[in-house]
Image (cartoon, rainbow, N blue to C red):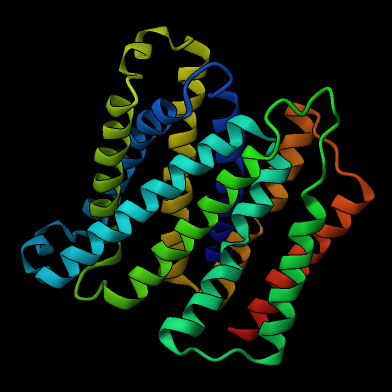
Length: 287
């Protein structure tokens, strides 16, 4: 059962990007992030009450609170950049760049945590890195209206996602994982709405098309469903199997980007995707 939940987590995670893309055709990406985070926050606290960890919040150490906030800020920055990248670029190009956070996390863990890298892990990093480069294809001139801005935002999203993982590894101790996620989501929510008001986009809330608002809410629900399946799978199954399966959500994203947005992969892009999947599966063996 837990294996099915792991695949369900990957499915919902893949759908998240597609639904988000549908919700930011006309809606400002920062406003979209703020709205979506509201939905995710509900799911976060739902998980807290499901596992019964709400009573442990008073026992969280002060140092842990500091790292929870820093981790939340990194998560918020990652989400804001990711949504902006999705708004400017193709889903099947943005997603693999964002997934390269796996490589960055391993490298940062080597630098700051002293975690070693075996030859197999090194080969996996190389495969994911090369695969990502192959999937970053140049747009046709008539479609390339934003230059490489999407790539910059996608790379920033990956960097902040990696920092989120490192901050969590270094300092988030003495707190139940679901409660930690809920607290981080609260920080993301505050950060997202601050960005909305700082950029003066709050007046656009009433201008959001109903269809896009619906897609944004569905995106938040997909994220929440992914988290619920992911944590339940981790609770019942093997983390060494669950985590790599969840990373395969990129296959779902690419498939739906083809079905919904007609974003086709070239042979080069398909080869890149194959390398990313192979590298991810290699990490499964290494865990």
